[in-house]
Each structure stands twice: as structure tokens, then as C-alpha cells.
Image: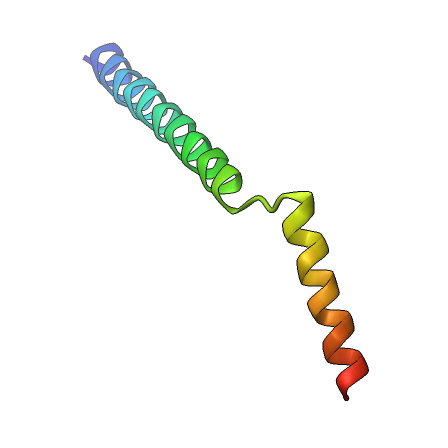
Amino acid sequence: MELFIIYVVMSISIGLNVILGIKVYQLQQELNNIKKATALTKEEVQKLNERLRRLKLGE
């Protein structure tokens, strides 16, 4: 009987770990997609730097 309880608890633990692993993978993919969507090109960075320079000179 005790061995059965140990197997049940172990099975539940393994199942939850698999689900957690899948969720972590999904979140990692989502994070990578967000990084790609928010990445700035060199031209955009240059334009932002130019605007900052103009603002500093205007003050």
C-alpha cells in the first residue's frame, strides 16, 4: 500500500514537471518573439541619437 502511494505521488510529480517544462519552453519562445519585435535597427538608433543630440543642443 505504501509503495502504491509513492508511485502515485511520483507519477503526479513527473507529470507536473513535464507540464512545467512545456510551459517554460512556450514562455521562452514568446520572449524571443518579443525581443525580435522590439529590436531596433542601426538606422533607428542613429535617428534616436540624432534627436537626443538636437534636444541637448536646444536646451
